[in-house]
Length: 317
Image (cartoon, rainbow, N blue to C red; front, top):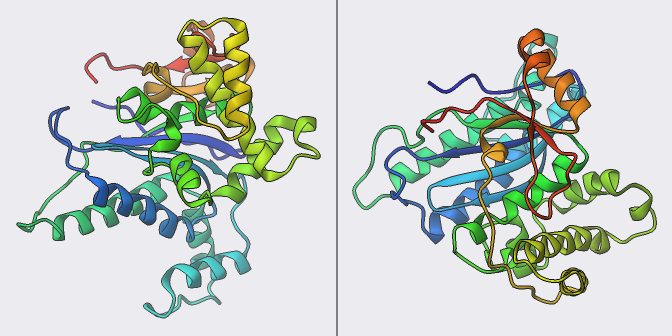
């Protein structure tokens, strides 16, 4: 049985969220129409939530989302604005004079479980009624999974892992060619659906390097690093790795042929520096057990060597 979903609300928290449909691994019910609808739905639902969505990839039988959950609940004005932006005049407005109503809505707006529940329920409803033969019942295999990412290297690496999912699945050789992810959407339309969120959080990671950089230059840094990692996995020379990274930074295409699924990105619990992982895992789980447990080194070729993971893996998954 899958463990409880991981949530942490004592400070701003980054999450890698994911889920897959029920059925055998080779059951692939999502085509282009379904993937497109999922992306649009995440955008719609995100207007209600104070979460910052950074990355979304819709695959043939599962999805990945990277987001940031704020430490504080939205203020009363933001709660009202988000409610009206999402529901419009389709529903009677809540009793805004009742503080308990505002508090309940504010708590929901920063909750990743509510966010995933709304996305999945709305998608299931649409999916069931649009089948040639109307479908009934559940669509998703289980509760969604969540992995906490430290807002430094783990966030950077997690974004790369999610955007390169279609490459690992053999659907394309370059994540920018996959139009059912935020990266491919940005290249195809010229607009990243969550550009403001992505740039703001990447600037915090890049620090002084991003101080005078344009938004495009900030995003190009992530693109360049994806090219560097894949070139390293291919066993290219240091000169070729550097050339691939620089070429990607200019916006020219780069070839990605290798990408491995690494279980700690989807089946771990907390990813980040050793101090961060010990601290957060100790607050979420049994502190004594966490202190004794050996952390996994989240390291593949081209990844930073100081990234650790606290894992709660179920071999049957």
